[in-house]
Length: 544
Image (cartoon, rainbow, N blue to C red):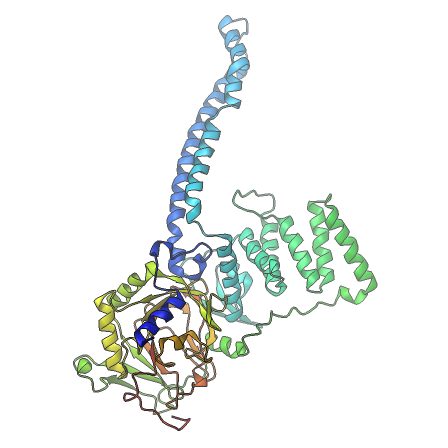
């Protein structure tokens, strides 16, 4: 198999950038890319049109019913109306024999609702699946964890980090959007169903609080009620070891639903437990955050997402500098690129304004029809995982002349051969709700990695272009090097993944922090070892 065939085989394994774009967005994956979430606005606009027609039909029907009611009421209110009048007597008998039957059994109401239901069924296939609700709920919990957000604040539409008594505003939206009691319940229930009571309890508590404040009001769209929220919260507290709270909430539940035998049995059970262990009345179990076995660097990762880590300013370390870069390339002589050296070990550089707004928008447009759920290598397979939430597409340079221009620009700036098979096709990524990619290496760490099917060695370097800005979050965090780089629109981040010896650089362990607010797009160009022998010569020193 030649190098070109190897590249084709790799892309076949990745199963990206091929096939019918119409089938690229699978149901259940809407939450994993914000562009897919944005597309969900179209079917909702169609549903709004259906509901508007239904409301107009119902308004006309109710106006006609009001007319009939007023007509009959006026006859009853006129005490001078004698039933001896044969005309009035006839109309009374006719009304009672047929008019009222026609009113009560009118088909107009059922025809209106049938039209609404038929229209909904036509749109239904384009709507997000329940898996999307679960994915979006988990995204809120992820943001809650990584950015230490307060659930009460989130429910009010406020993004605040709360540490003890210190409150920090992370993002101030132009318009506050509050969650309803049912919204909070659904987030809590997703956690509850996973047995994750650490996240379930604060969301269910907020749901109970909001339901209490609106008790007695009826909202057509709600699935849950105060009783549902109390039921789930009581059991969550019990599972977490707080029996006294479980008892209190269960007793409150019985105030609203006294005939519920299951809850009555729970009350007896909790009372017995507390009688046997009186210290449970005041003791509250500490609920531990769920452990993430694959992420040993969680605290460092989340700390870097919240701040800029230990990234030094340029005046503190003179070897960190800014310059206009040509790399001695004629291609860049007339238009050098602004270069900022971010870090030395590992060597990380930020190239400002590497692409224009027009170029960034075009790249996004080329990729959007082909976006599919991002995957990661698991042995010899590629699988979607919870620790990488995004969609991606691979663009060959034959798709558009802009991609050829981009390759020339990257090659001139890095001095590397970026033509296939010595580099992969451009991967364009759009992050989803709370989209992230937990700490990982870009280079292969296993000899069975699909990357080696290209027959061009490991990934020696990464060139990542920020194709959009975000309003909050989404930084690129280098875990062991202890620094992070915020999203800089149209800039490109470059680093070496391998030492000159060919060994992987452990300090390049990095992550894409969750996007708090915004639509994050990046483009990745991964450059391989082969073809770079005279452009980046090897060295036997492990430090090079």
